[in-house]
Image (cartoon, rainbow, N blue to C red; front, side, top):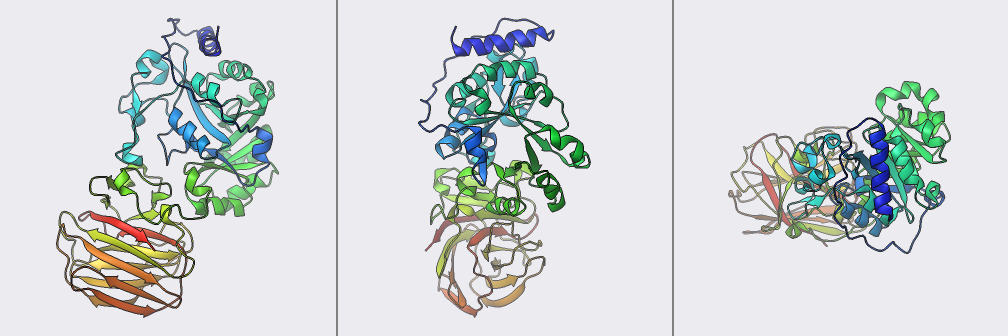
Length: 479
């Protein structure tokens, strides 16, 4: 009996012992498993790095979450640890998937506990609405394949999403050599599985949701590692850090999240945007819209509203369209930080369907010191400039202090009114003590403003109105 057969048989036997039906396990199709990486990482080495990183759902801002592809790519990108969510099918097969049903990721609403592996194996996880239209649809991976590939070379944060498979999963974990050096048991801090896991010698991580902080003195001593959401207040983070155990923040999407948590004493980042957050320099000088995929670091102003806030990437037009009903901004993190020193940002902008109303406008926010969200007409925690274009051709530059809603107009000039569906070419030149704004299409216009208030390296594409027509950008270049 090979390891795959052992794992599947062991999971099935233990699940059946819990009084579930006993259909025969479906045949498992062969899956190509890459050779184990030469590097080998254990828990001690991971925790010895500050900060340390775990690929949240396989770094789901970059690749299809909880797919074999995402786990592999995050490890190829340097991850020492991956987070794996697990549920058991009706015939006792462990699959990697975050939700208890398949609706969100596959469009087919199947409760994993009530269907067989054979049924699940026909489905594909589809993240195109989040990652871009060129993202591949990926099968749900078998836990056996993931562990065979990575359980002896990397650290696995393993979570039983159903909360009923502790004994079966411990048997699986125990079957790997040096398993206590590579597995971390992940669970909600209010649950009780940790007691059984402790008996097997595994490191435990208990994560705290808002209602648990009042019980922190009771719950924190149960775990080796503690978890805090990126939405937690400074006081809540400080409460957990105060226990003197390594604290891991989840889920970390932006560099500013990383920096805030590090400043508060958090040691680990469960990261959804691994290639970007682990870096400090720009990945490119031009956009990658023509690939049909979102580049690492490009993100909407919030990750709390799901795929509806992700702009539409059009590979054929090599463009991105901001069409959300609310005021919207899109971080071009793949090209940030720009500078230091003088630089140019060039782009093309158009309203593809119709022009906005007179009071509505779109443009670029720039000069921000970090990637904290910046939206025009919505207060931000970071100061910056924003350049806007109106339907009458008015091109204007504003500065805005953190915490305020309304910016201060620094200068404006009237250019030719744009036409629906026609591209306007704009350029921002940031110099040592001034800023030059240019419109490069048509007759050409320019204005210069003496101001050196903000020289940060982060910029955003902006739709500065609710409802109204979408605005589209392309040919974004930093030089």
